[in-house]
Length: 248
Image 1 (cartoon, helix red, strand yellow):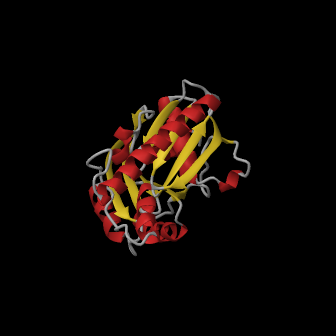
Image 2 (cartoon, one colour):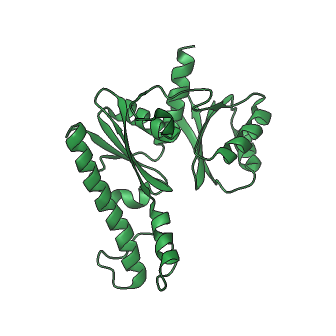
């Protein structure tokens, strides 16, 4: 069994795969000082034989690599170091692209066809664009929902710090719901408009795939999203691992 690990700025997603099937998904906060307890629970329940990591947080990668080496008896695969994402990368400076974005692009093209647009509502919101020839073209990076909501409280004198949730109404009738409506409907409208503009560039038939930690919250407000796949990155990691071992 494979343990696929996606290390994000806010949380770490861990998926247990048997072949192509995702058996179990776990999540732990990235800010935890140790991940040993969460890993031991997985290893006690499943016969993990290998692990692959995709990360945007180097410090967390080092901790997990050490823990996994002890539990597996060998090093896990680190994407970008031990394995590469098998997609043609047309970024002006290819090394600048986050591995997670390449994984999402590859997985979306493989599972949903190309051309395709991936909108990832994570700590940051990213748009990743893959051409009809399955080339990674690039995309966009924006502040995420939580970051934007926190910024309102931190950078204004009278707006409160509130928890991200669904707004009660479109036209907010109190401060909390005015903030929530602005964030949810505002970013949904932004995602829809940018998706339309990208389609004008790469083809009207391009599918839009939504993923990321906040996709279940905002996905239903986005009219351009065709499919929601919260496990897209984990499934992409499993795909890359299987492709690499098929070619060995």
